[in-house]
Each structure stands twice: as C-alpha cells, then as structure tokens.
Length: 193
Image 1: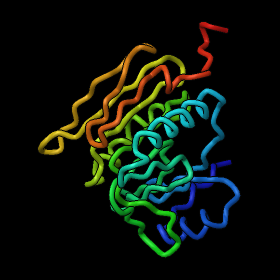
Image 2: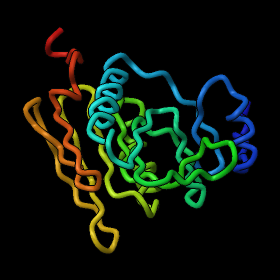
Image 3: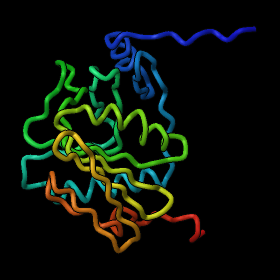
C-alpha cells in the first residue's frame, strides 16, 4: 500500500491549527512538523542561558525570550520556536495575537541529536534571511561547546567557537558575555556519569 502524501498548509492554516494545538509544531515550506520534548540537559542549558542574558540585559532596552516565542520568517516559509531569542528595541509582532516575532537580534539553538542537522542546515539558511538577525549561536548539549555565527558586511557569516567550561562567548550585537561554566551549570555530561 502506498503511503499518503503529507498535506501542505498555508501560513493562515498553520497559525489557526498551531494556536489551538496542545503541542508546539514548526512550519517549514508548507509542512507542519511536530516538535518533540527536550531532555533535562537541554532544558537546563536553555534556562541557564536565558538567566545569564536576562541579568545582563535587565537595565537595557532588550528582551530575552525562551522557547515559547515563535519566530515569523514567512517570506522563507518558516515559523519556528528557537530555544532562546533576544530582541532589542520594540519587538515587531506580526499580528494582534502577539505571538509571532519578526525582529530577533540573536537566536540561540541548543543542539540535540534529532535536531542538529536541521538547526545547522535548513533552519539556519532561513534564519540568515532575517534582516535584524546579527548573531546565531549553536550550543552543544553533550559537551561545553558553543559555535557563534555573526553577520558580516554583504551578509557573510563568520563562525567562531568556544570550547570548554573556562571559555566565554562575547555577543557583540547585544554586548553580553556568555560564560560556558554558567551555561552548563548543573548539566551532567556523559563522561561524568
């Protein structure tokens, strides 16, 4: 028996379904993709990163959002829920529901085995088209490692990495430092078990 083709949805159909759903899904090129739950290390890293950035940005005109803020990149066929998002200035929300952000400055994704190729590949390709985006960080959940991509002139992206608990990632677009020892606080790594 042949498998049924997956249906394609319009942006409007996706948003209607998503807003009524019990579980989050992303939208990519007309397809709705269910999101799986995150592991304990993933959740700890996200919480630690949000806490660190919020503390540094508290007195500034920037906001830090965790994984429930949806990013609207409809021109690229994408609605996604990054793990951490930073916006400076007024957030641009695409409709009256106030749940689709259009102007992130920093996006951070914590990598898992099931999402790593998507976060590095198609998702980053589409994120790069967001005019406001200046930095994209990929955080390993298995080892203290952060890859930082920063926008250069002519929309080129420069990658650097920070490895080890003593390392610090400076996010120049928001003038914040992320100490890996803080990002990985209380996160057990497989070689410690």
